[in-house]
Image 1 (cartoon, one colour):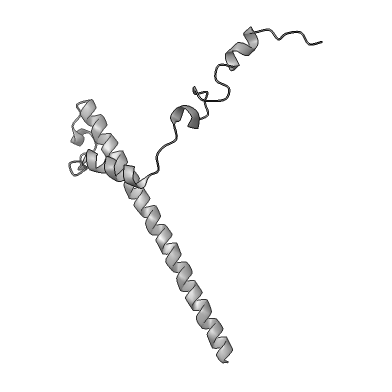
Image 2: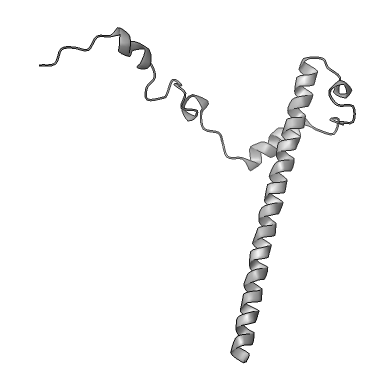
Length: 115
C-alpha cells in the first residue's frame, strides 16, 4: 500500500512538472505574440507618418501614441539573434548563392565537345 502511495505521489509530482512546463510554453508564446503585435503597430505608425496619414484614419479606436520606436527596436534587438545576411539566407539567387551568375549563361555558352 505504501508502494502504491509513493507511486501515486511520484505521478502527481510529474504531472505538476508537465503542467508547469506547459504553462511556461504558453506564456512564452503569448509574449512572442505581444512582441509581434507591438512591432506591427510600430510599423503601422511609421507607415502612417511616412504617408502623412492620421492614426485615427487607419482605425479610430487604435492608440499608437504609447509606442516608442527606439525602445521597441532596442527590445527586439536584445531578444532576437542577429539575422543571417539576406543575399545568402533567402536562397533566391543572391550574390553569395552557389548558382549566382550561372543560370543565365548556361543556354548562351555552348559546351565544349567531349571526346
